Image (cartoon, rainbow, N blue to C red; front, side):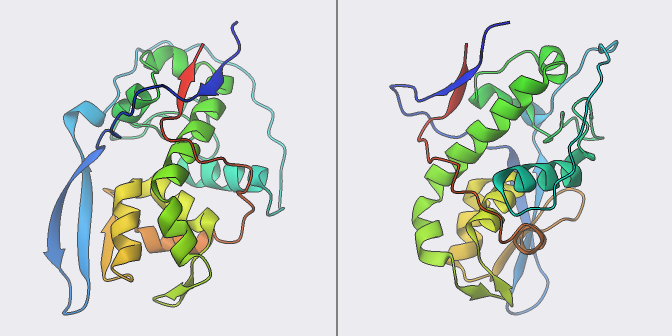
Length: 211
């Protein structure tokens, strides 16, 4: 198996939109916007996936590994072969358009490759950190709607809702709150994933997976 690595392409590509947004007013001060999957964001998976044994190492630290495993448990209970009802797949619940953005096109192989899934998670974090680097610099340490803003909380929220939606949330000082199709909002992720050390993640403008 060829080793996978994160690379920075020479050309600048736009991040593919995972969702379309329709909004409803919930009160005079806040607007909730629901993120529903577009057809091209949903992955189709071939049945008959090869099973493999996964050994989990519990962690309670605030390290990057702690962040990664806590987010994975929230997304899929840490199961590499998980496919949810909307077609998002793997340990970190990637949509097809995000996988394509990272130059990953075979969803069956992706589900059977834990190393590739871990590399894809780091690549997406690197991309989100690049997109949100100004907002991270401006917002970390502040409090919005009673929530202390941390870098790890921002990256977790971006994994849930997309970097663009997190940018809108931060720049509106919490006036615009985004909720996914299952009813989870960015503030929840900002709160439960705060305080982890994500300095390991380097901001990369066009992070992809390349053989």
